[in-house]
Image: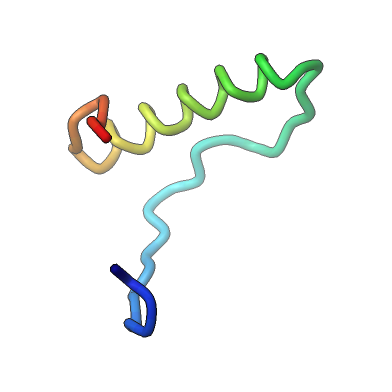
Length: 50
C-alpha cells in the first residue's frame, strides 16, 4: 500500500519516442514490449506474476 507515502522516482533512460497506434491490439503489444524492455534495463525478471 503506497497511499500516503512519499516516493522517489528516478528516470534511467527513455525507452522510445511517442507514437500513434492503428489499433488497441497494436498498443497492447507495444506496452508489453515496453514493459519487457524496462525490466531488462533494470535487471528485473522479464515477466511478473500477479
